[in-house]
Image (tube, rainbow, N blue to C red):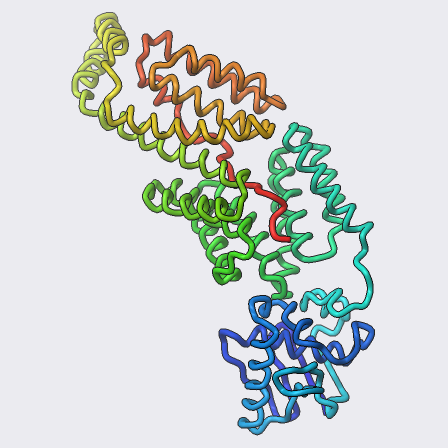
Amino acid sequence: MRLEIRLDEREVRTPSGPVPFNQRTGERWVTLYACVAYRRKVPALGGPAATREELIQLPGWSRTSPEGLGVQVQREMKRLRALGLPEVIVSQGGETVGPYLLAPTYTDIVFEPASDEEVRMRLGIASFGARRPPDLSRLAAFADGMFIGTAELARGNLGAARDAFAVASDAAETHQQRAQAATRLARAYEHLGDDDAARATILALRGRLHSARSDLVAQAILLCQEGWMAWRRKTRESLQKAERDVREALGLLRDDFTYPAVAGRLYNLLGLIAAERRDDEIAAAYFSYALEIWTLSGDPYSAQSVYFNMGQLVREQGDDFLRRFIRRGLPSWHATSTQSREGDARATEERLTQSRGAPGPLPPGARALYERAMSWIEHAESFCTRVGIGGDALLDLIELARLRARLGSVDRAREDAAIAVNHARNAAERERALRTVQAVEDYVRSRFDYRVLLRESGNLELPRLARGRRGPR
C-alpha cells in the first residue's frame, strides 16, 4: 500500500483517505508518523523500529514521558480502528510499550517534499536514532566561534566578532545552534551599522525553519531577534510587527520555560515595546516577569539588562513628572516670548535668564522617581563592571551621569561621564559618552536649570535586549 506524508500540508494520507487530526495536536502526530515512516525508508538511522525514549526526542513530544507516549500511541491506534482506517503504526511489544514501527502493509512511502536532506531538516531528525558519536570537531568549532565572538563583541572588536560568529554559524549542526549563531551574527552586523545584512541573516534561516515546523525553540529564538530588529525602527507598524513576532514565539514555546534564556528575552522585549508606547505599568509587569524567569534560572547577566531597562523606564517617568511641573509655569514664559515678537528682545533675554537661573528645587515627586531609577541602574553598573561587560557598563555610566545631574550630584555626574568616555570601545560609543559630558557641562553653565537636561534626555540608541548565556542547550 501507498503512504503519503505531506509535510507542508501536515497531512498523512492512506489509501482510504487522510488521517484526521485535531488542529491543536495534529502537528506533533504528523511528526511522529513521518519519523517511523522515515525509519522504514532509511534503516541506517537505527533500524525500522523506534523506542518510546527515542520518539520523545521529536519536536512536540519533549514534555511527554515515555509511559505517556505509549498511552497516547495506544489511543491513536484505537482511534484509527474506530474510524475504519488501516493501521499506520504497529508495536513490536505491547501497545503502550513499543518499540513502534510503520505497519508492514505500507511498501510505497512518499514524502513531499521528496529530498532526503529536506525531510531530515524539517523533521529535526538529522541525527535521530543514529548509532554514531557526535562530531566533536564541529561542536568545538561552534563553541569556539560563539565564545570568541562574544568576547570580541564585549571588547568592541566588531569585525572579529562578526567573523567568529560566522564560523560558529558554519559549524552549527542543530537548529538551535544555527539559530543562536545567526542571532549573534545579526547583532554583530547591527553594531557595525549593517542592518540589511542583519535582517538577511535572520530571515534566511527563519524561512527555512518556518517551513520545517520542527524545532520550535529555534524558531522562537529567531522570532525574538526579528522582533528586536522591528522594535528598533520605532514606528507604529514596526512595533506592531515586533509584538506579533514575540507573541508568535511565545505560542511556539507554549509556556514551556525549559528554555528560560528564550522566554526571558521575549518578555523583556515585550516590556521594551510597551515602554516605547508609554504603557509604563504593562512594561514594568513584563520586565518583572523576565527578571523572575532569569533570577530563578540563575542567569545574572540577563537579569542585569532588566535592571537597566527598568531604570530607564522610571527615569522617563521622572522626566514626565518634571515636564508637567514646568508646564504649570508656562504662561509667564509664553508672555516673555510674546514680548520678544514685539521687539523688546533685551528685556526678554534678561527675564529668560533670570527664570533659567532660578528654576527652584527639584519637585519631590520627580526626585523620588530619579532615586528609584538610580537604584536600578547602579545594580546593573555594579554587575557589568565586575564581570567586564564594557558596552553595557558604558550605557549604565551614561544613564547614571544623567540621573546624578538631575539629583544635583554634579561632581559625581562629571566623574561617571568621564569614566564612560574611557570605556568607549569605538568612535560611536565615544561620541555618545562625549555628548553626556557636554550635557552635564551645559547644565552647570545654565545655573542648574533642569530644563536643559530635559531637552537632552531621551532613550539611548540601543536599550538592551539581554544577550544572556548561550541560550537553550
